[in-house]
Image: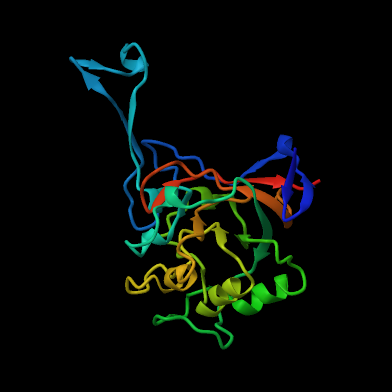
Length: 258
């Protein structure tokens, strides 16, 4: 498929799109957990003593879903996650195809002179400005507006990890400010939050990233990027469900550029 972006023509291989969302499995523990340990649940609509489930001999399936969007599944959030005056996720005007770059990052156990807004401990690991700069400096087009970050090591257990027991790496404040400085408007990560598991409820990195970008920026969390997907430039479709909330389940797909 040919698309035109910033006065340039690109050919995308739509037959080889790469789905980086994590499937939602209902009534099973086979999902990631972050704070909320309850399971995504599905029940079926009842009417006139009939359960609308084919397994219960109903005429069709009419499922009713209970899901913690932020804590159990791949999702995309707007600034309304932290600011009631910001647009809802379905009010943002987001391109169907966003020019993006995928990088693989080694989180480190040392701040290396960078900052975070909350007290830390010896077990914390960080995605630093220094690491991002080493990967992106002189290797990123100003046209790129979405950054997809795969953390290493990249094991498939990310698809059902309990992050309450196995804490995730998170960004330094300097790293978030650096991404804003180079024009990144959409962050896509394979961790449950760009902030520390517990930062005293401040969500400091969220506030830094969304500040002055409330009408355009998004954060997509809890993706899984297979090792088969190589680092480099792609177009991404975030696949956001049309929910009038601060966030919605999403199915981001990467499209290789031919």
